[in-house]
Length: 463
Image 1 (cartoon, rainbow, N blue to C red):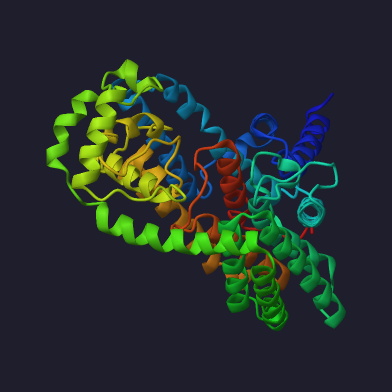
Image 2 (cartoon, rainbow, N blue to C red; image 1 turned 135 degrees about the horizontal axis):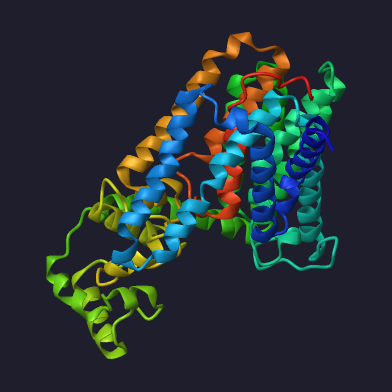
């Protein structure tokens, strides 16, 4: 088998793996990790000359510097907090840097069938939206699974992320519809409006509140930036408002869900602003009552002895304001800010918050979680101000370089670029609650978006 034949086989296999990526996100971390690993492996074999070349060196250098900062910080602090496994994970995290570059060079070398990728996104997003709607109306989805409380989770079961999935991929579905239509007449605009309404309904009925806010934010950005769809989007937005209003007045669960979301959002902003800088010198003596050795930081048994905990909790409650737990975000954010301020510039290393949060439990309104539930608080905790600054600088450099090249693109390429820019902006929006930045699903999606955004040519050839 000669080199050219092998290269073609690798290209076809890579194309299939990337087409399967949106599907693997429905199945769990194992298949996502396997898929990303295979894409990286075959990508290095196919594009090693591109990956290790000096073309667009500034872009490559900035992103590599971010990944390098994760490794260095994790190595430096791993022993002091008992996060030895984090060192291995920080090296393995480099796969997303390779994943980012492979996607870029696949498109630039005309090896990725973008049209089929977009069709996959349209099919999957439409199916999840229909499944959620059916589950909300009948109590069970197409496969007979019931929802969980106020959530209709479709095929995701106990993982309540159906709305998030729709919100992440609906823009790809919109790109697909635009690329399938040669000209946008009234009938085709009506079809686009129907699909957007379906996606809105799916997110609304899923019970996932932040994805709904981000969906509407995306639509708002599209109204501003895409004049060809402006009238359609404005009309559809009126329909969104009507459906939301009817849902609020006719469904007590929907009303309670979004009323609580509004109240928790306001209280979170207010209380974090009021309490994040507050000091508790009188409580420092209680710190010794908590487990403080590395072995106990690793353990889940990080509370004080029950008798001491009860007594000190009563004393603390009398002297300090104790927040209602609510959604839990305000106390997680306060803890994350406290932990970050201990190591402002370097952070504590990859996935360290689940350990370092325990050093703040002697303070009121602090709690331990696996991650801070906000991308930027997690970046600050794990990579410090330096790593976070490098990441933001990399994103800004990428955004500015693409926007500056906007005039050289044809209409469809411009539409593609604008939609991916909106998707990336919404995903990296700083003022939203999120899953873990360094989780498999979120990291792969973030660098999937950035890989598509980094392309400088050949966008339309495969669409």
